[in-house]
Image 1 (cartoon, rainbow, N blue to C red):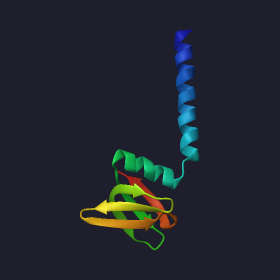
Image 2 (spheres, helix red, strand yellow):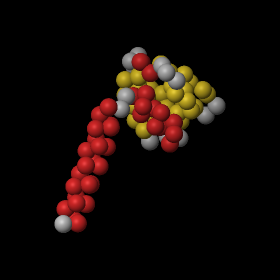
Image 3 (tube, helix red, strand yellow):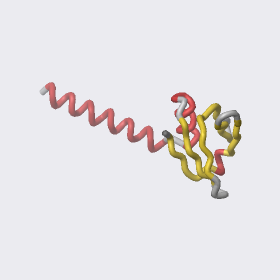
Image 4 (spheres, helix red, strand yellow):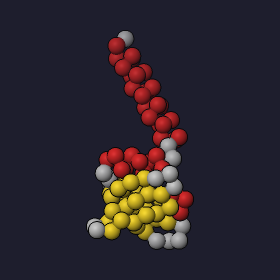
Length: 84
């Protein structure tokens, strides 16, 4: 009985995590990367690729630190994101 309850709880937690990821916006994911101090690679609609550590996320932009460079990118121009 206990094993079945644990399996049910695990399945419910997995479903909740999946539902949260489906509702997550790109901005939400960038905020998560900022909290984790993650290095990201961003591709933009003009074909450029940028990488750096997410330093800040605004309402419509993200700030990447790449060495000594602060790079501001409009979130609306980001096509793909990889977190490393």
